[in-house]
Image 1 (spheres, rainbow, N blue to C red):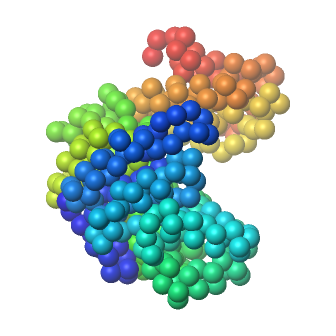
Image 2: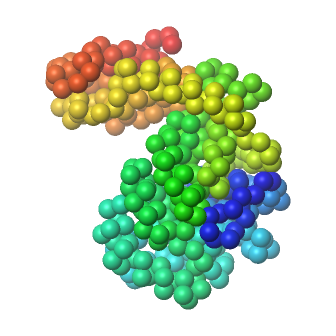
Image 3: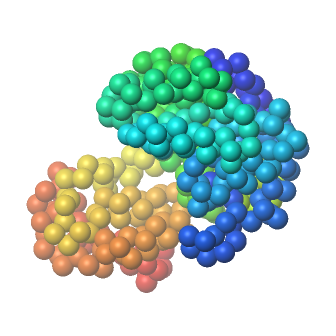
Length: 371
């Protein structure tokens, strides 16, 4: 396993982190619980392979993830850096209860990386700065947490704003080959000594499949998930790439990739940059995602449909695009409910023939026409 510095925390962390959000489950619906017979051996195998960073949260796996991680930590606590999250932003009593529950479920005396769950700039300015920061500092003074951190969902501009406050020691955020909008903020975080933990290195599963386009990008790397993971780790500002592993095969494959000193050579990353940039420009020829076409009177999610269609056409990610489109259709937001009123075309600054392209997208993504 290769280890990296986690910002100014002083921790040396495995470049592969175990994201405990997708642990194997048993049971149905709200009664489903983590399958200990599968999950705990997976966690132990990761620990044995050198993974020393595990990330969970109160609500993961029907609120059972922390308990499963806690069971797996028995005998390993002194070697594992534990990250968890608190989703409360209003009620102080509930915030402290979440912290107390996490400590009990994880069977530990303190939490190494304690995160505000899902921070954005509005939440920081309206909740964290005036109230929650005091609770965090009190918990740290009491020795219940070691480092004040957050998971982040917002724009690059607001990522920079959060970093510039100096409040956060580690930030967990989205970054992958298909979503690079936070790269500037990631570089600034590294410069300021803020540890960067990446969630979604395989783009929420979209890069966990086959792609005839991406499989040809780098000689010797035929599997798209491996390419995606190596891409994230080739960024020197990244400390940890979290993988939401749900099978032992995932664990073994990720251990093999992250035990390799070289993520991607400079020339390989440059080739990926050039190719992805070219594909992104091609996508923008069809739709920039400006959103001027919505709201649609029939609630058709036009930008999302075109984004998935472009993702499939340009990157060859048909399986994930079709799955996402099926979810849109099930919510009544697919192109199948378009009545061709033309309101969207009147508002489109690129003069895209939206009605025609929606028909094409529906045919391709619903599997009613050949690719």
